[in-house]
Amino acid sequence: MSIRNEIESNNAAWEHSAVTLDIPVRFAETDQMGVVHHSAYLVWMEAGRIAWLNAAGIPYTEIAGGGNHFAVTGISVAYRNPARFGDVVQVVTRLESLRSRQVSFIYDVRNAASGAHLAAAKSEHICVDLDGQMTRIPAEIVARMLAGARELARS
Amino acid sequence: MSIRNEIESNNAAWEHSAVTLDIPVRFAETDQMGVVHHSAYLVWMEAGRIAWLNAAGIPYTEIAGGGNHFAVTGISVAYRNPARFGDVVQVVTRLESLRSRQVSFIYDVRNAASGAHLAAAKSEHICVDLDGQMTRIPAEIVARMLAGARELARS
Amino acid sequence: MSIRNEIESNNAAWEHSAVTLDIPVRFAETDQMGVVHHSAYLVWMEAGRIAWLNAAGIPYTEIAGGGNHFAVTGISVAYRNPARFGDVVQVVTRLESLRSRQVSFIYDVRNAASGAHLAAAKSEHICVDLDGQMTRIPAEIVARMLAGARELARS
Amino acid sequence: MSIRNEIESNNAAWEHSAVTLDIPVRFAETDQMGVVHHSAYLVWMEAGRIAWLNAAGIPYTEIAGGGNHFAVTGISVAYRNPARFGDVVQVVTRLESLRSRQVSFIYDVRNAASGAHLAAAKSEHICVDLDGQMTRIPAEIVARMLAGARELARS
Image 1 (cartoon, rainbow over the protein chains, first blue to last red):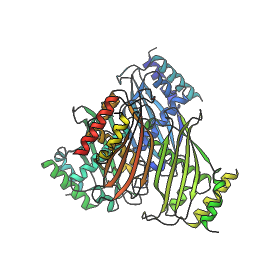
Image 2 (image 1 turned 180 degrees about the horizontal axis):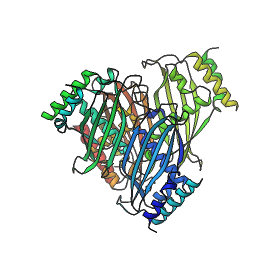
Image 3 (image 1 turned 45 degrees about the vertical axis):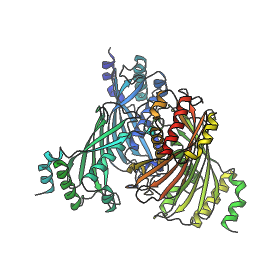
Image 4 (image 1 turned 135 degrees about the vertical axis):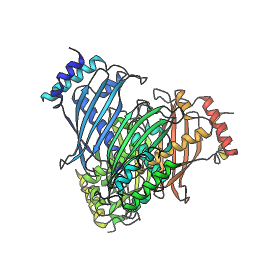
């Protein structure tokens, strides 16, 4: 069974592979509009997918330590409501797709206290080596990400 | 003629209303992959649209001073090539659409020296008042943005 | 007894009023040297003093909500060892001095796992009003900060 | 003549080796106090010393390309007046000291339009290799920095 097929047959499971990370808003993340600057959400999303990888059993330090990075090739964010200093934001991260050279994640950002929806977002990545050249995601990493996603969906 | 109609009839002109801003990459903008972190592009795009407004004759300090902000409701970025410390990046900003309550800009980010395409991006905004409530873009601001876009397209 | 005298007589107690905050290093905080950029420590120190104020029973949201800010007038940091992505840093914050218009905090930043000393730092602040003008720290805030420091030292 | 002695005999000259860099304040650099966040000054100082090195004829990309970095070991900043969105800040950087393993710079940050003094600052650095280990500043770099400082002082 190819990675692609295995991935597609697991899509249903992935929908349930959400990992939740709570992040207290930093004062430095606000701007003079009195709310969090929109660029902070990209940093939160990054923290969210690192938490997803950790929860799935593949710490990003290990991927990077092995000489690979998931370079960002696309970002989209729909901002619904502002986040403010004093808030704790909740980033819910899901694996969206996994191919031999590409991976994407989707995110919901909420106010942890009220549950208000702050943003919906997506990130797309390619695997690169230490020289920044596109490369296949090592087979072992793919296998562990799939197993991790299945495990997360089960729990 | 409604603002909407006037906007649509000016679309052709806007395509040529590009404003170019050169930004030297900051060392602090790099990450341990050795290239610029993807969140920096949002800050460059913001600098780009502020340069567009300045060039169009409507400094953002004046919009903010009048009690309004163009809050970001959507961001999308397609990253093509990495930017590195030592590079000067060139942000080319165009007005994409202008409605009574919404405005959007599109961006091309290039390497200023080589012309290499680094990213294509878009930002969507609503107009908010000092309390963060959605409001109409003041008619005078709309008129000046339109006049500015036309002027930029002509020059 | 003046605030000043009360403060001085409490100095011994303050030495023990440490509040500890654990912060996972963010990937975005690294730079191309492969370690955390030195500017991130200022953001961590800010999070540390906000945690101190929370623990002392005076949330900073309340100070800001009352129309005051502790504007930063001085920062000094001695960096001992680098922090890396994957590390959790531990910020230990202590109140150093409290006067009618000024307050200062001291910080120790450590690697939470190894205990390695990463940085020693200090921040100095004045109280400003909503217009940014220097003003006295409201008496009630001073009293609560003193009571909080005493309580922290006891526990 | 030792590097140390040569340095000391050149101290008088260095006082005049100032390099000026104008930096437009970014909206993202403000916080909810309505002024620039204090951490932005460290990024401006970094841009200032990179401009100094460029002006002195030793681009930092070349130092880094040769496998060395000037890691920050100390930072101190005295903040005098706030910077605001819309301002252009002027960073005046001077070499303060240069030893075989250490270098320090001093900075004055002003409002470019009014000349108002915003901050006085200092940064201290050690030379590290690609593994982050302290090492001597390569002799050629020292010689070029000294020559550059002399040249800057003359012009």
